[in-house]
Length: 390
Ligand code: IFM
Image (cartoon, rainbow, N blue to C red; front, side, top):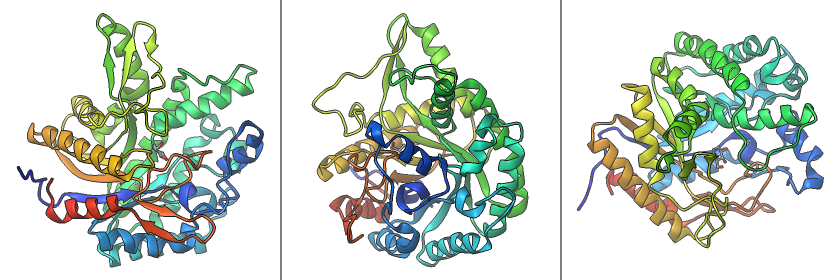
């Protein structure tokens, strides 16, 4: 049976600057990659050289039939030192927007995707006294190149930022890095919420774009009797970041897997043969759980799937995972949830934050020649986009 998606549904793929551009020398991740190299953290280096090759990346997406491309601006390029803005870098990102639009791809622009300039970290990062004002000032300058952009995400996965920066904070306090079971740091989370709340109205006023942020949904499921712990975990992990979206134009749902919560908290997922290359459970149904939970919290705010995908070397598995996830998404849409589009993670096999082996891409890249090779899943998703149906 053919099942259709709503009219004007966006079909696209997503990337983030640091994961594809290369040579982002001036951000905290580049710094971390050097400091943590002895612990097995890999370098982003040239990444995929998408800083120069983005027209080819976008062309491949458009030729396949996709209608949207989500990418991020790199704050550390735009504001290399405090208060000094690069007009050339702003012009670079404007060219990306124009290239996407020229190819028939709706740009979905993220202003902050995990990285920040080294100087921002030196001023205390998200807990620095001036963090919100500094982010707002960067956003003000970013707005100068956003005319005509319809979708703007302020901050990507603030809940994961709060986990990562929370860990850095623990280490700075002389505590151990928690490899398992780390929770988002609620104080950092509150700073991110304040930054989002300061930036969103500004972007709306300056550009008329739809503004929202994107939350990493865990699709938590309670084990019997663990409802109280489940509520606590869900609030600290997700709901405190979803609640501000009630005032937004959309909420970005990012979903990969699902996890159980018992009376002790999130149950670590065991090693299993069908785990993805991230070590996550193979759970295409997570997208449906994530969308429904998001809807329960945000109410009428429209949903955009800003990330969903799988790290695998088996492209047939990528297609099956995505097909099944889209089926669950359609079930939620059929139940009346307002979903505006689906952006696959990721367009390219990219730098997975310290690792190169988890391949999420619809396109493989030779990292010595930078040659792009579209995988069958790109053509498959393009066909779904053209038919607007599965
Ligand atoms: O690669 C990341 C992305 O940067 C943010 N969301 C999850 C993806 C897969 O881990």
